[in-house]
Length: 360
Image (cartoon, rainbow, N blue to C red; front, top):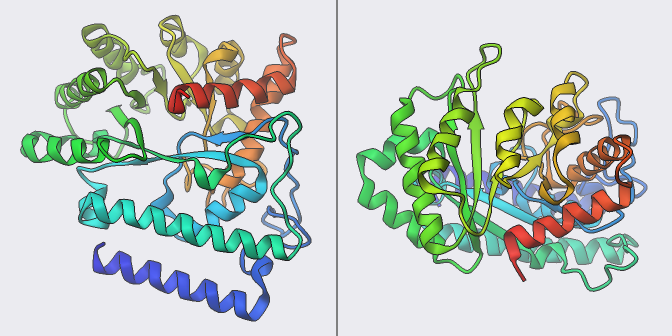
């Protein structure tokens, strides 16, 4: 791990343990009278009780600033989350934060081990993981932490500058037991990426071929330029998919934030669509319209934590536990179509996540 990051995480861990000794584990974890969530005015915001196990298919575990990864995992387990998929970028994120893939894997194992300890302490104080009728044998969250690895569009240039080294680093991560797919990879024409379209497309195609060769699923990051009615990034991704084909194990549009018209060509090809906190925002009618037309067998749920906390927690640092609010909103949108029940949506979100990532 890099020294600066290591010192920050060590400081956070020590501060947490000091708070536990002084206040007790619930208070240290931000839990009061069994409430996990509070709005900006510190009022409790109860989450709906899950009707099936819940999966966060995209959460950046190493990017929290206001909490620790172990705390986030503990709170997520207490909320009813049973699966987390962590995207990591071996080309950029690993050298910057962990130096080596091995160090990253060790860090994840350490966070899970500490979360076990925190969860046991919570249970000693009377808290428990929600019981879900019919899912008594579902795997628990701390046994279901997976990773997807890939060169994000932001690091595509590094992949071009040193292709052999970047490919070797990616292959090393893909060989690790916790890794179940490639992602997030794609095309980004947003304000933070100045790479040419062709560079981004070529690196996307390279990684799609790796997914094909290794029979891995893929999480796609696709962001259009901010101009109205601009869908150039999505069109370029479709162009790349026509050249490579859809990976056999499946393809997902991560954090979908556009309308139904942009989405339809992907649905037509059987691409999964992951919806996050943005689908709960007041002005996100176009996203909800896209969600409404997405077939039940193609929807997934995610947080993209620590970004885009859902309503009614918008503005806070997002964490995996907040997926409970997003999933309930997804279920409401699908129920409003008059075609499915809330329980069917909950069940589909869980079944789809298991099929896409675990394939057990």
